[in-house]
Length: 182
Ligand code: IMP
Ligand code: MG
Image (cartoon, rainbow, N blue to C red; front, side, top):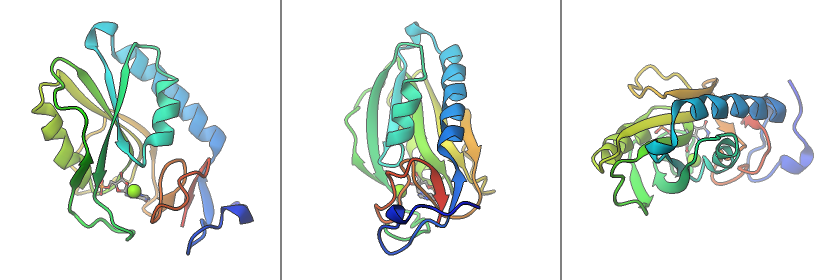
């Protein structure tokens, strides 16, 4: 158990404990990038679709570890307010991709918790003509009720509230270069 730096203690709550360190994140992202590279060809017209905002750091590292030609876009959904529990409601806040005709889509998510977000989103992407829709999630909480099956998973996550490397609590802590629990 490592103490986090005093400078990280922003907002009302402070991260208590580093769960996944910077080097461990970097090593896993390299492996995921290699596996993803081997699974797509240039002719798949791969679109890597990050779910904002939580995926932004993972996404930036992951696409630089993928050798297959690809394009990048983002969607913004909101299923959480400032609470640390899911509200169960999903809203599409930003959606620049009306057609996905003939594209292999790789959805990049920060963390799969209840699965509410992806269960809502994936059928909507498939309905836009994607040739395939797969999921790469950095973290998976392995909540039993989730029927979503990501093709790539970075790490199994403890069932506590995690922040850093893109993940927030009420918009704080996204910039931390490691994953910590609150
Ligand atoms: P789900 O819809 O319950 O699977 O939740 C997915 C979304 O909830 C993620 O993309 C995150 O934005 C947020 N979320 C779930 N668990 C955590 C957590 O432990 N820390 C930060 N955000 C979380
Ligand atoms: Mg969030």
